[in-house]
Length: 401
Ligand SMILES: Cc1ncc(COP(=O)(O)O)c(C=O)c1O
Image 1 (cartoon, rainbow, N blue to C red):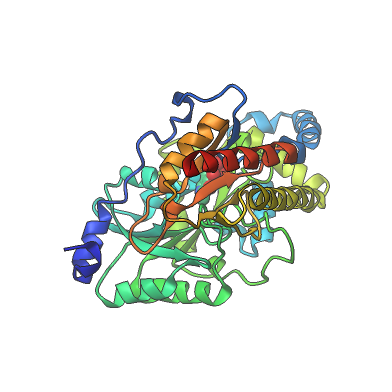
Image 2: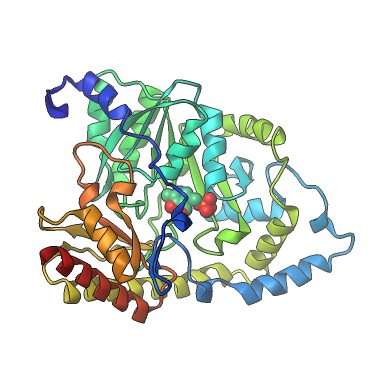
């Protein structure tokens, strides 16, 4: 009996076991690679578009404040100036913001607050593996929900719920999905919130790429910020730099005390100094965040286009390539089923380019993630991206003989 012929509930149980963290996750450095390898591995922002000078100036101002408040303890929820800035940007009351040590920390807090041991958690299929790593501590079971060109398939989720699935939470990346790059349309967001409210699960909306939209204004309405059933997880990682380890949660009012209580049993609060510096950066010149984003968006949009064009030039007809609408990744799909995607990655490594194979992202039937490559273009200069495409083209020729 194949997976497709199993009754729905058994099929789900079978899928659950497929969703584990891939072997070697986080061990990139252990693999041998060429000294001149071009690494298109992680969603890393380019240093040229991070506001290093402005952060240095903000640090100097913060450290010259009388009494050195930035070197003292501060509130578990985060310092007021930073929470106020975030709340204004999110369009929610300050009371709903809790500052975190980045997106992954926010996810960990959200999981620990909403998922009991053994609970069922509906998740993106394919999924960003780090979320599964966070879930391991809760010994939760997973219910994969297909992610299509426009984010998580809310219709499929609705079907699974009507068939009897009762998740405690659902995890998805709504904007510029990692890895598949789609964004969930407004109507689907509203329907997801409606399902969460009806069936009583919590949506964990993980949104690190939201601000890296290449063109057009951000949608005015964000349904994820207006429901008792959503935790919206965000981070300054992709916009101001991952080394800051600074992010935030937009929580429903009812969950704020739980998250704060949990946090007060762990690390008390995020670094007062880092929060103070970032708050100073963002409020001293109110235009700085958007100006920083504009530079980043223009750079990433041109890199995405350059890489897509180079792939088409160096490997004509081999990939379905779509230039994403934002974010830091290209997700090309191998057209020819006779090309072995694992062998291609090994040959590409021998040619001197490292990327994440689609199979790195746990996925079940109904997706073709394993036929994809995830190419990160954020921190690689255009000439190197073009060179990477040349090397991928050579790797394909090796297989074609
Ligand atoms: C989908 C997704 N969630 C969370 C994170 C983690 O963000 P942070 O570095 O702020 O912990 C990343 C980073 O790559 C990501 O891609």
